Image 1 (cartoon, rainbow, N blue to C red):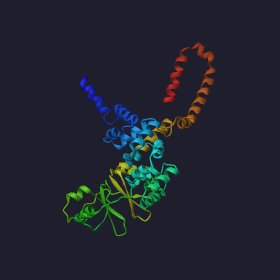
Image 2: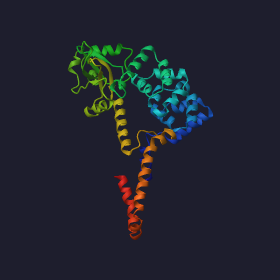
Image 3: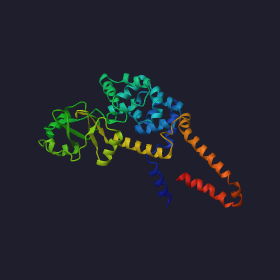
Image 4: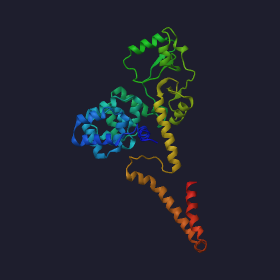
Length: 341
């Protein structure tokens, strides 16, 4: 492989990773108290990269960075942060900065933020929200944990089933509170029951007089508000859904779940299964040593007991092992293969 090919391979392998050079430059700006330089360095970064940066640095550097960054702190960063440091970051934010950051979030991101926080941090978030948004968040938290009601966002674009393409286009152009990102217009009957999804692409490609009911997608899944989030993620993966309406016990439209939230849950489910197979439970690289030790100690204790029992059994055959030295070589191999199995 040529030198050019090697450099290309390495750059492609790390293209989405936060480089050490970037992290070092940010820390130097923080240490020097250069706020303008810090803003210029972090402005091109995605919220997920900034969250990754905050997870990599020490607690003292994290606090100093947040303090210096000030009002530039974006609410999307909070939703991207690992749960283990989210509370520390919220505690470090000034109240006015936290209020502005939370107001920028969609309703599902606010709920995701709230459900993993202690009561003092939850109160701080609620006080930063408008009354209407706070009421929506409290209602979402009333649904069971790990349910569709916790996942969904309340920002939905719905239209009566008798509307035409021109009607919905005029509605969307005149509306001032459309979601920043959405994929479907949900058709509803007079009782607010969802009856179909129409993609934005079909709307934009159809004549104004075309009825929306003629453009509905063939695959249409309705999610009950109390359905387990794992089942929701499976439905999205199984039926290749982009978004799906959520209904209450009476079948009325109350929200929508989008593909990004479903894939997050699917990734979490897969990670949890792998960790359980490994016998290590849930954890994170940013967890504290004490919490990691407490979580690992029972398994380590069980392994120690079984190892002691094995050594006691082996001691009973000390004479045989001394006569057949090859057995001493085979024993660690058998133990290792047994552990792998």
